[in-house]
Amino acid sequence: MTSQASHLDTTITHVVQSLKDPLHPTYCCRYYLYFLHAIHHDILISDGLAPITPSNPSEGLYSLPDINHSDLCRSHPELFCALMAFLRAPRTREDMKSLARSMEACHCNLELDPLVHEFHSWNWISEPSSRQRDSVAFSSRSDTLESLIHALVDILQLALALWEAEQLHSSAKGTSWPSTRQAILGREAQEITVSATMICRWLDEYPCLALIRLITLVAEGPSIMPAFLHSATLPKNIVLLLDKCIEEFSPAINAGNVDIGMQTTIIFTVGYIFKLMKQLETVPDGISIAYFYDEHAESLLDSLSKLARIHESLACQDMIWSYTFASTGGAVHSKLVLPYDEAKYHHLITEASKVTYQRRIDTHDTYPDVQKNFLILMTVRQCANPVCNKEFDDSWKRCSGCSRVLYCSPECQKIDWKNPGKPHRRLCKTMSLLGEATKLPAVGHSRPPPLMTNEKFTARCNKAGIAPDAIREFNRYMAKDVRVWKRLMNGG
Image 1 (tube, rainbow, N blue to C red):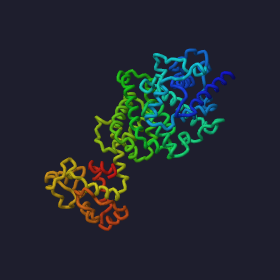
Image 2 (cartoon, one colour):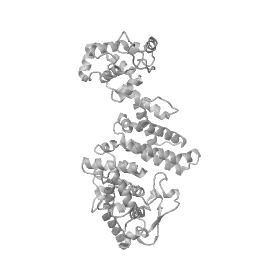
Image 3 (cartoon, one colour):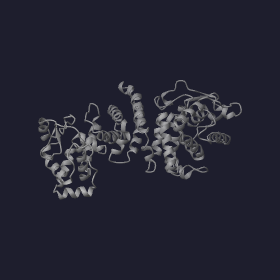
Image 4 (cartoon, rainbow, N blue to C red):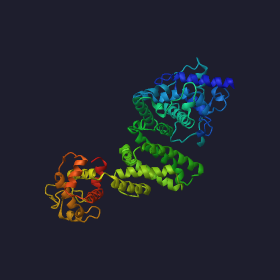
């Protein structure tokens, strides 16, 4: 047993030394793939089966008894620190491509070192069973940098889960684990930003669930979250992996071929992504997360709607799934001011969107929003009838009561006067008083004046005798005008 432990120690030292310069690993992809799969092959995630087979399974690293992952983490934290340093090392896109070319072409001297020879003497299992892989859509089985990144991150995310669960940061001996979650990515803000950027860049280059799980483990806390929230590629790849889940699991679901094992796989696989999405929601109003997805928001809603239908077909109640449909889906839908079309968006999303919409109306600061709504009205170059989309023409007439809105025709003015969603007859007097009290210019100006301070605006409204109830009513009706609400949600 001592000689076996010694061989493991020697092997790990060999690997760590080869990664001493994380930007320039000593050996090729095959070397590292063998080592990672050999120490990982007994982990439950792969059901005890490795995707590779060595030429001499009775010798070398593969002949050792099952490696206890917890013991490995405790006794060799330097291994996991070296793997994390490789992943964190700052590289441009071109550097990553150059690294792939270098490591995928083997130039290792197999004759000088028995370990290097052993680490090259293996083959992929030609037809892996479903137990030997996470999912075809999420893993690569080739002598490539992509396959190496997947295997490396799979080991790292398991190690970090143990780091958290067993408090290895306070109990490991020798070269210690990072003492805090922040220190995993770096000690200074710049280091954390670079590390987060690199992890997101690897995800963009080689999308896989293991990287999502890794980000979930490290992306927590006010000093770390902003680095991931500012990623330009993370939103795109979250949507991409959700779509991969749909593509992977839909055939079995549509065929009604889902047993309890498959159902558990679906729930947990998608749940990993949903857990990260929940962590990214650092501001409870939902607006920040809608901005995070930005141009990918529509695609996200499409993916979430499909997954909500899958969730229904599985007849199960998983809290993280339900939370994501309601919280993320509802917030994004509401932020984009999209129609409540349940043929396109799942009803859980539209219902949550309605609640989010009403909450924003109820909680918005009343006076600041009145001023913003007025400024938006100043720049709307369309007919004031919300169902009319005609662009402004010099021949149009203003409302004679408030002089704040324009109509393309008497017919549109009549419709807007009794509009059930936003009746101008209920707003006309308030708009007239607000316009006179604040000296805001009439409608149609392309450059409205800058916002007054809240205190100054409120004082002028009070001096004009505008009742707070009238202010709240104005805000409530303005929120029902999609054109105004969209502008308000986008910052005015």
